[in-house]
Image: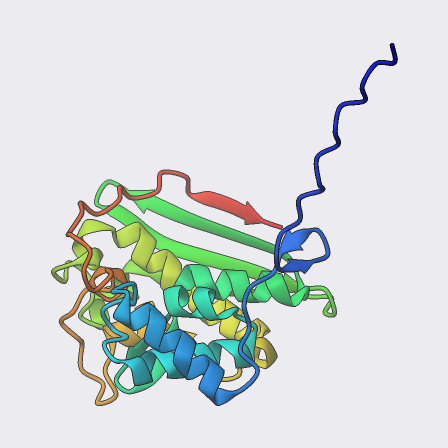
Amino acid sequence: MMARTPPTLPELKAPLVAGNAVAAIIPNDFEGAYRLARVVYTAGMAPKSLDSIEKCTVAILHGLEIGFTPMAALQSIAIINGQPAVFGDGLVALVRGSGLLEDMIETCEHDKDGPTIAVCKVKRRDQASWIQHAFTRPEAQRAGLWKKAGPWTQYPQRMLQMRARSWAIRDAFADVLRGIRSAEEMLDVTAAGSVTTGPPETLREFTDAPEEPAPSEPLDTGERIR
């Protein structure tokens, strides 16, 4: 009696594949972007700054222009003073995804009263020199940011870091960002030049999500990103 050969299982494949990774759904026209925005907004998964289907659509369209997939754009882009802006972590994602970032080094110095200066150095693959920017505690004090209620009181190191990062990346990768500024910077200063009152974290909370405790401030003061 011949032994039965066990049946082979069919090969499983992801429905949308780009290379070896699952591909994002990318709309190819305005109507597709609008429909996707409407689904996200209706599901209650849009951040608070994107408080309409139209704003979600604009975020998706801006994201597509600078290299974000639609869902990444909705998580990384905020509409502030009527303008799109990208949170600091999103800026890093953009320049890394561009293939132009060779190296990035961020440091922060402290004294007994807290952080004193944050420095960000970035190097493009097509340039020989580094581009460096710093943001200091005295600069934050002159701008009326130091000890301001919200993140500047809770996470001063992080806020110094985000400002130095924003300036360095904007100078080094203007062709990638195409005029998009950092959300942290735009939240600090309104179009009229006065300091805003809303903390950045409120813009990233989902519309129907319960409030959660803010994350603890990062401990490492020297981060290298490749």
